[in-house]
Length: 353
Image (spheres, helix red, strand yellow):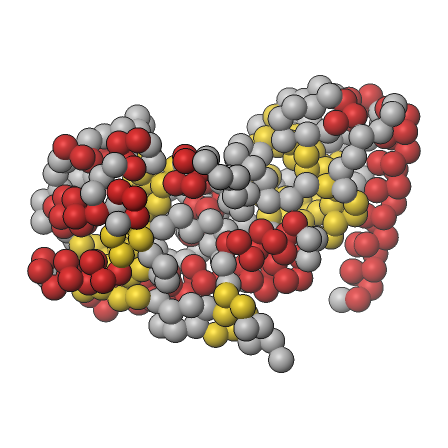
């Protein structure tokens, strides 16, 4: 039996938290492209220099929230509930780049969601604000005590903090839940700790989602995430090689340090009217000398110029691994097979439903 289980001031700047992320847009309202029937309003605060006096007083959580999986969603539901209980806005504090991407001393973990995708998912959770802080050498060296006193207390005026399991913060990860709880007693804010969420007796985590995606196990990834895995981005100009081969593609830059999966996939595409079907390649395109990871999608029975459009590409099934071919003719022959397999998959899927 498959089971999911889980437990349950004036704003001011200070030396360690000097502004480091330039932005002229303090607050942004996003329209979630996957929810076109409603406008989801969520304030995005880009950088500490955009914190205003009106932002003081909140219920907060801190983390990377890569993937916004079921475990994250459980924590955020508790955050929103506590926000309503105390009559204070909910704030999620996150970082760009993610701390492990900044250090890069060990292999960088694949990024499940770039910032735009994360914001799209967070806009569905009911939280009021996202504060994005640049992670750099200055951020890395801030002592845990200063994070609490100067940031949480002085700048955000927190009334309550919700954290996940294995929570650490501050220089060399010196701060933990116990330290935060003791500080809450001193400064007058509450703290709660969410237990581990498990699925099939294993912890739900971003690492487990990455492993499922790398193995092509989309049903497991969907159960861990609570939705199918997708990527978002705007269509950019490419080299038009696909069009020359008779299989035009839309190209989307992945804009992440490392992608969670590579290969050829059957996908659906949203952002062009009705949901469309397609065959996508995620990778560097070795046959044509590609260097930068790219998402290329051949949309079935569709041939329009859509440069600049924001698309959501949802992965449905892995067709094969990306590989090198000795010629463009050989590549075209394989792409035709990929398209045939993609059509067959969607025909089977439609018949099954």
